[in-house]
Length: 457
Image 1 (cartoon, rainbow, N blue to C red):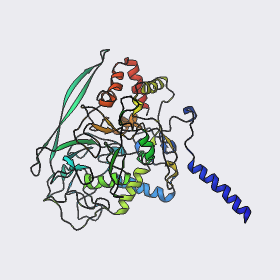
Image 2 (tube, rainbow, N blue to C red; image 1 turned 90 degrees about the horizontal axis):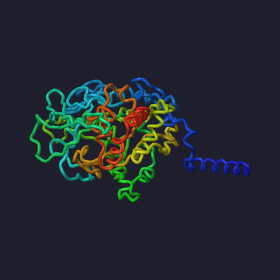
Image 3 (tube, rainbow, N blue to C red; image 1 turned 30 degrees about the vertical axis):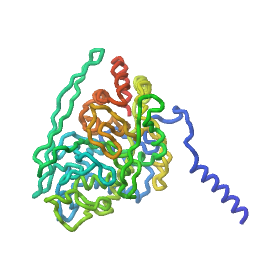
Image 4 (cartoon, one colour; image 1 turned 90 degrees about the vertical axis):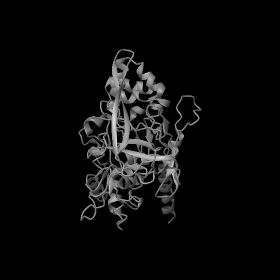
């Protein structure tokens, strides 16, 4: 018995040592730079690159992932219906894939079946949780489509003006500036509402981002700019509908959502009008066109849970052309221009005991998950918890070079205004103003090298 106890003690010490071990300071060259998601990386360079499952799932977990995959493409319909009822009465789209085309982005239009753009709306002020203040009769998101017999809340009209830009070496680029106007509102709108367009982002890798320890995210914050680099990133703290507490936000374009579960549940309720266990009332609650059916929550827990698991277990596409000298030069310029001050290349995940492929991974998302002031050019003027009207979360860059292949014509930034990566960079301002100016002053060959690096991600 004593020998068994000694052996057990030794094993326990080893086990605890593995759990508590800090990430080792490895030389970057000892890692395969293609593994953007660590063990959760997929080597798929086709139009389906964003929809790969992570490896190592049990047969049961694989079944749940595949179920979620099917639900992601499932069209929901208005009640009553024998299969997938609950759509509406007001909504933005009829399925997840209608916005997140091939698990990616889509088209920045509004009110059309292939649209991937929605518009948030609110009044100045805060709700009881410190979030955006709903507009009476409209809530905090405009639903621009409706089932038969109901009326969309409003029509969103988008126009663009082209603003030419000329580099010092003579190359010219046209930046398109969007303008948003509402029409055909089902009831009068107050005159002081705030609007914020949001283009649906790609959804892979979210399970990894959820596992980045909060302490890691907070370690990047420097709201007082104590190091003097001009970067003042800070976290957003938001209401969590699961715990009922205020917690760190990490998802959404303003880091206004705390977890994958909250993100998915909110999308079901707001984007498709499907009430669920986290958001148990209709998005049309309080409106004259509320369906008043006693069927809430409409979405079965099994569907919500399968969808959450599916999103959590999507793999990250591998990098490409990592040994190309031009790509390597562009990577050095990315660091030299201080782009990596916000788009932090390498992070480490924590532990999910049910998903070892996501745990203890060295990943390359190129984000700090913090809020940064991006200047007046990108400002929407709409606060969201602790995000001001000119602040946005640092968008992850992994997979950005595959957007054109997966989604056809690529669109970038929070509202899809940028049609090229060059345009996206030129819209950067605020804390990124100096990096933008450094990019502008580069020789064309160096700008092209930087773009080659971004396209390798």
